[in-house]
Length: 167
Ligand code: HEM
Image 1 (cartoon, rainbow, N blue to C red):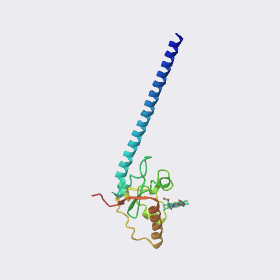
Image 2 (image 1 turned 120 degrees about the vertical axis):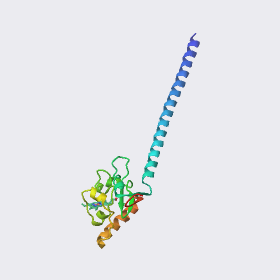
Image 3 (image 1 turned 30 degrees about the vertical axis):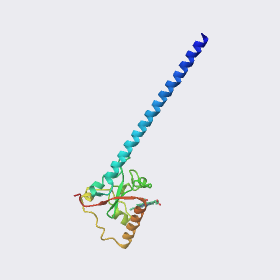
Image 4 (image 1 turned 90 degrees about the vertical axis):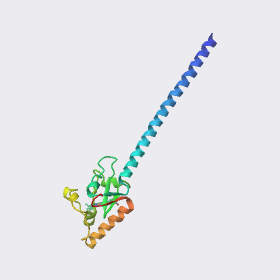
C-alpha cells in the first residue's frame, strides 16, 4: 500500500517536473521569438533609414527635415555641397535636439562654419534661396571652412549631396 502511494507520488513528481520543464521551455522560446522579431523589425527600420538617406540628393528643404526630432531620426548637415550623417562618433550630442550645435542640424552649415558664427536657425527665406555658392570667402573664412570639412570627413559619413532641385 505504502509502495503504491510512493509510486504515485514519484509519478506525480516526475510529471510535475516534466510539465514545469515544458512550460519554462515554452516561455523561453516565446521570449526568444519575441526578441528575434524585435531585432528583425529594428533591422528593417535601419535598412529603410539607410535607403532614405544613402547617396541621396537633398534640397535645402528636404535636408531641413533631418534635425533628429525623433529619437531614431538621423541628423544630417551639409558642408560645401556634401551631406553628412552626423549621427555617430558623438555627433548627435553636438548637433541633435538640445545639443550646443543643434542650430546646424538639417541645413547647409558652410557659411556659418566659415564665419565661425551662430545665427537664429533655419528661416523660410533661407529655404527659398539658392544654395550659397561660397564664392566670396576671405582666406581666413576659407581656412575655417576647410578645417570643419576635414573634421567632418574624419568623423562622419557622407550620405548625399546638396542640390537645387530634385528631378
Ligand atoms: C563660445 C564659443 C565656443 C566654444 C567655447 C566652443 C567650444 C567647443 C568645444 C569644447 C568643442 C569640442 C572640441 C572637441 O571635441 O575636441 C567644439 C566643437 C565644435 N565647435 Fe565650438 N565652440 C564655440 C563656438 C563655436 C562656433 C561659433 C561654431 C561654428 C560656427 C562652433 C562650431 C563647432 C563645431 C562644428 C565643432 C565640432 C563638433 C564635432 O565634433 O562635430 N563652435 N566647440
